[in-house]
Image (cartoon, rainbow, N blue to C red; front, side, top):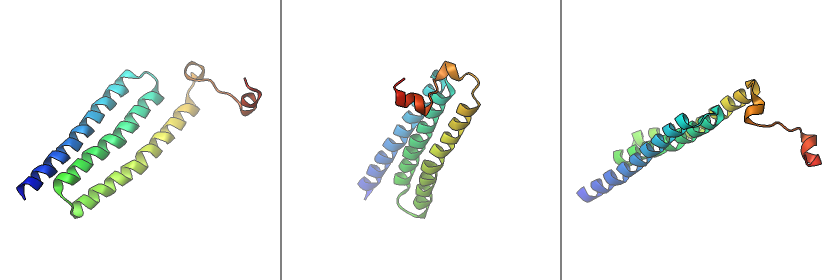
Length: 116
């Protein structure tokens, strides 16, 4: 029985360390990128994957009980809410950006059909 506890601990610790590594990569991406949409992409992907792996590690270490179910529901909520909120903030940035020509070009539908 003690071996099973050690295996749960090691697997949970691996998931938590992987989540921590994702958070470090996210932090480097947020500080390294210059454009706000690139920074938001790094932050959103890091939050979703990093928190998912970290909480999954806690679930494995804790064992399967009612608390684990609540933590799993937190993961599901974060996987739904984080991309949606990032998308809305990105749309706000694109619509209110005053320096559009510096970051991207905008093409109309007719221009795309003509092959420009």
